[in-house]
Image (cartoon, rainbow, N blue to C red; front, side):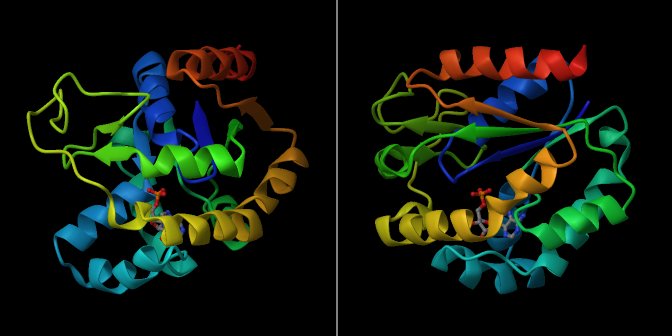
Amino acid sequence: MNLILMGAPGAGKGTQSAKISAKYNIPAVSTGDMLRAAVKAETELGKSAKSYMDAGLLVPDEVVVGIVKDHLSTEACKNGFILDGFPRTIPQAEALEAMGVKIDVVLSIEVPDEKIIKRMSGRRVCHCGASYHVEYIRPKVDGICDKCGEKLYIRDDDCEETVANRLKTYHAQTEPLKDFYAERGILACVEGQEEVADTTALVFEALDKFNA
Ligand code: AMP
């Protein structure tokens, strides 16, 4: 199954993507994770992406399209994949079509902005990729990752001003993709729930219909 996961920043794409990856045995391809890794490694790509990311803006299409193209052509993606955070603009979606990649389903996780803002101010992440929340997904020991024992931190782009910008960017540039994929008959929407497990149940229900 080739899947695109959509949703505002903080809607729970990363969390659900890990659940989907485990159930359907397909890898998650997160452009946000790839860009953060490039920033951390201080590569040329990372250096040019950082200022956009810190401002809550999108990294230019040609940069992101290039990294996705390289990744989708790897062996790991040959039996399917989850695109988490890509495409985020109509030109990116068109570039994906131009690559000849067939998408089976586009799943959008819908969460109102007020909830997103509350969620993101409590988000804590780990360098290993794990993500927690001070209220909803607490680690066993405060401030420490359950998986690797490292200290959790707040992502640079989770500060309030950047979150507001990221939401604005999402509504202006990414949300129009819902119509783009609805026209192609492959859009499914689920409402994000308070409990992660409840959202996961809705996500699996929606995906099973497309995967039948
Ligand atoms: P994410 O972790 O998916 O929320 O991504 C974090 C940041 O990386 C975004 O706010 C953007 O600055 C950048 N980014 C991730 N994916 C894309 C994309 N498909 N197009 C442009 N910028 C992206």
